[in-house]
Length: 245
Image (cartoon, rainbow, N blue to C red; front, top):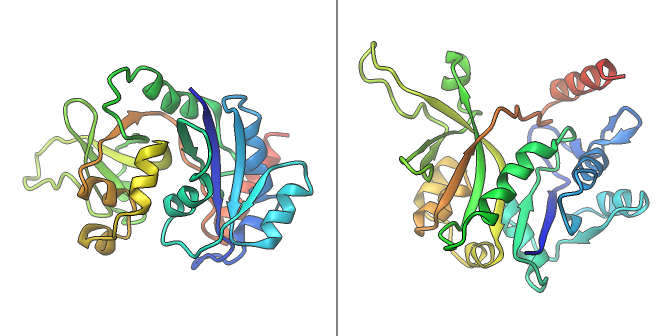
């Protein structure tokens, strides 16, 4: 089974333009993400795929591998699908470009899903972590997921799901962590499907998979995602990095 990691790296960002090339302890955010992913030693290859010459050169000039997108894409999955269309691979792991502290264990958990899937019933896998804080649960920036008894995703939403109709209701809440692992054929099929109502409404690409009947296996983890979406996040990341010295 050949497994690669691909890091989609779009230059523009609504909340924080050019965030991926911001300095983080002497290296750019995207370079740290690439190196952290590479150093897990889990993959046959690691690539950054980008629409930016600046990001492309940043990775290449530091000994990494980068690919240029030929098209404009609605989602990271679409960008990756274009890049790997002609690759001879089985599993592609999508690592978010703004997560410079990517860790080995959650990536191992995703890969294990496919190694154990002898009947090939799983199209893609992703991560979730249990949350209990009310602010986290109700925050629309934290995407929630509900699963069936076998751990397959039923729905993702920015809303509070499941909704506690009664005040004494007891429910478990899980935040979706946006690291994915795909079978190549599922990823290519995704890129050829149109955006439908659910994806358009919630602005969540994973809903396209569900709307077209793909099976997403969710893996529970204790990993806390550390994405850099704002300048405040970058400040926190710099402080975190300083604390590790």
